[in-house]
Image 1 (cartoon, rainbow, N blue to C red):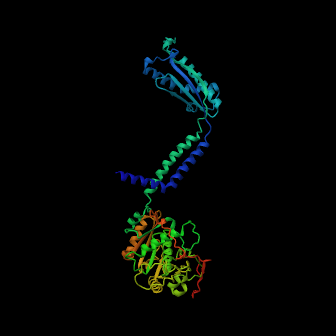
Image 2: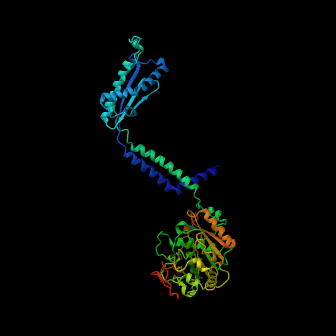
Image 3: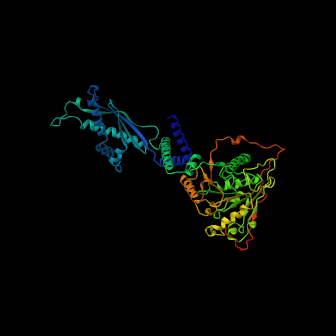
Length: 514
């Protein structure tokens, strides 16, 4: 039970952390509205007066009990009568003021077991407030003295000791401060109400939000254990940038990428894979991050790698490889159409390969292996605007993939999101392994489930790997900040001095639109 309560509390804490912006926004709007309302209120002053009520000019004896309270309540109600209001308005010449308006500003407070009426009057003018309240006391005491005296049938007064009485004990005087506005109180109340409304809005928003919250949630939605995870700050990491916008330690970043590479390539289903396709359910899940960095990691091991950008609608691979795409770039679409051979579309990605002492043998157990000192990375980019992807057919992409398989150790395809468009279907059915990417905190669980079902319809599930990005790592990877000594030189990938400008000399002579 204690564990369950702890988990529930942690869930609420996590919810507040996720929706803190919404809670703060609602609270800020509420406080702002209260501030505008408060400072637009007119200034109201209040005067106070105390009247003692009794019988025969004295205080009501305590022995009377409930009768004394009844008399006090009766006189309290008579004080707020229209007769008193009309008389006060007439004597002070306040004719524009109506009796209901005056009575709305007049307040009578009684306390149990006392014969004291505390009378309050509010007005925007402090002098008017005191003057009206003084006249109210005068009129009321006069009416009590002349109207409530018991008389015989001939109109003569009876025993005066039984007649109700009212006397002003504490004359009308202005209270310090103002009744309104009260900025501190209003802002405090608005803040409390705003926080409660913000929490309510966060709970409602959470009920309708099925975004993945953890790696186990992604695994449950996909129906398969995650092969690898990538921390949130590494999503968007570009391997050839000399200065990372996220201020990441390149060693820590490379360790994280190396874990992803090792997890995928040493998986029993993908150990013999030559061709891999990286896709996701929706954009911005980190698929291009995985494709680009996985290609660089394999090339640094000494393998011959070709990475292909097959997302013809929104290509992004060239940015990760620091390659500038021109309007006449020979892209994948030109190869599939047969307008250019593969050799003309391949772009050499310059980087410094690792030394023999630093490179590992990798997971490949058969097939051609590039020498350890000649790792190579080439790219086939996408030039948007040349071709409508649906016009490329199904058979030709598979044939191009077969040709690429013979030209390199590994072929990695950065494909379009599989739920957004069907452009990747032909490649998905032909590659050895599909790497499905889902992002914690962004991808909806329903989208991950849809991606899983789509991949299951297109291909065998045994060749699908799940990589979860945006995960919070609790492992001590940062501890292993190992850097080789001078005897074993470690070569970091060097960014090109200037981005490579790729232009196409396609036989068709077509120019693409950006």
